Length: 208
Image (cartoon, rainbow, N blue to C red; front, side):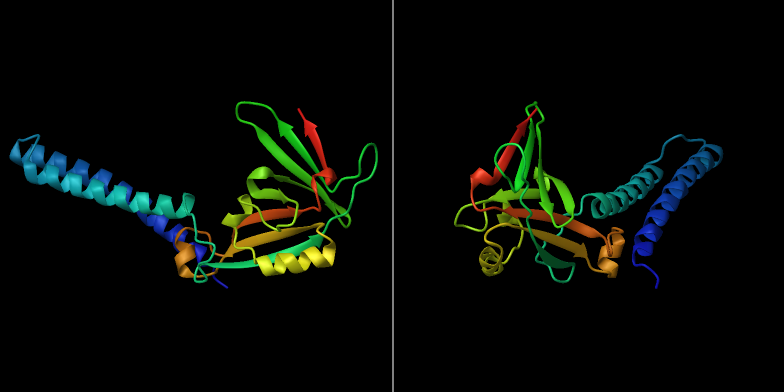
């Protein structure tokens, strides 16, 4: 099956070919103007140069925005398909208190923070930019509000896993021509981890 992302590649090729065209076209018209009209500047030629460059900038800007700056609405069913996977946490035991999640923090001007948790057979470490740790009676916090979790499902998982699970939200671009323009069709748009624990005592803090 032909990928819709080929559409985006084709459009970028057209933009590049148009860049080559206007460079050659501007150069050719300038040489012709000097030879035939013995002038180095005319308003009609200058205006045509401006129009060609503006068309290039608009086309390149549009493609750059669609390719590198795309910020899709996660609730747009025409563009995004999403799923939520619920995985029970495995408690880590050893020196000190048992914990469900370990937080590593770096105290710097541009600080970083990662969350590490265990699930059956796996150790998972995620950045705080794409995750949140939630405890207490409410299954969501302010950070997770940007993700379209279903609160009624989270409450059901609270009962099923005794508030010890991770809800992994995955949004993927649909395979259509609209997403193909930015070469995103079929790719992951975002992935977010809601790490649910009973209370703060199940958090281990590592400071660096």
